[in-house]
Image 1 (spheres, rainbow, N blue to C red):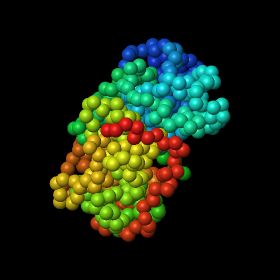
Image 2 (cartoon, rainbow, N blue to C red; image 1 turned 30 degrees about the vertical axis):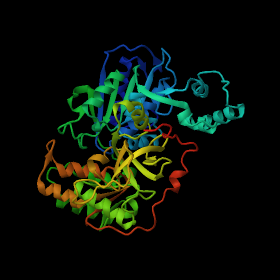
Image 3 (spheres, rainbow, N blue to C red; image 1 turned 45 degrees about the vertical axis):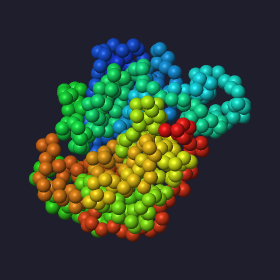
Image 4 (cartoon, one colour; image 1 turned 90 degrees about the horizontal axis):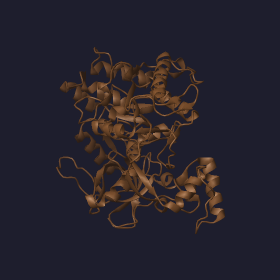
Length: 509
């Protein structure tokens, strides 16, 4: 087997070969770049699991490059060309917008699971433009689009490979191009699923209906979905269908954050000893910070990670208080977390519109201001391909010692939001931020309670997930104190994002 030019570790190379053998049964020969009809069983699932630092993402990226080089068509979230009968396909999926965004920043064209479960219905005239841009059709002649506009679209696409962006340069909005959404009818071929520890059984079964060949990439040390009783979907896989990667140790890649995460595997390690390790690490490396307070400036874009809801609510209210947020309104720049969509069945199309645009449960957004209609909000969906959305919103601000949340404003129905300055560690799974603040007093409470999940102390699983959300810097917050903000919340950097953002205000909800 000819391995990629990049040098893989021994277990990565073995995993690459195992996936290669699996794909050969599916009719894809990576060694000779041959694409044939599937040869093996109808359903084939493999899991490549490993803790943080084991190179799962690197392996996923190398497999993607090999499949693309072999001629496999990549199905992404931005535009899906009409499938030819002999075309083989690959989709790279993640459970959340932020997890997909992390992969895209590494050159992997990932999208959300939901965006693949549902497919867009394109305007047939403008679809001709998209097919032409993708090299699958002749230059179209469409009323209202000048030759200059088409030239601008092609010039943009040749540089950026983005159909929505190219159409925007031609003066088309996304709502002109996409007229609706429907459940995917035709199956695809191969699915790579990152952060698969977050999958529940329903999502797993949905994916198996679409992909006869699935490769799951996951971390067995993370927290299982809340409705899975501590188990993960890849737990039932055995033998050659479940391969575990070890941490890669390279002198130039030593990372004190990963060192701390892997130290949690020691069964003799207690909470006090672990905190001493964190403090010692902070003295040796500025990537670990022994924090005496929560840094409020970071909370607008990377939430404080906590275990208890009561802690989360207190921190959110402290954040709003120090920024002088009024009781009856949101400030531009406040972070929110989508808590679902409240729409009756007759508005199923609108629900699909919102979810396909990234407003799925757990999505992180930044409030940009009120929309043009009462109850509507302009939002920036973090990690979405087209981040700016305007949607009917129901915003809930939870208050300490109050059973019912305070609702500063709300549409009659639409996307519901909680405040996002602090989130639970469970909800943070699948996301990563450059700097992460972990509120350690909450983990101390979990340790003192002696709770166990999947045979391991709960505080260790919580600490592992929280720590591995940090890409560059970890702040271990030891006291229940909040700093003062250095300035007002900002949104100017977000408003400059796309040239022609999609709008969802085209019909009344």
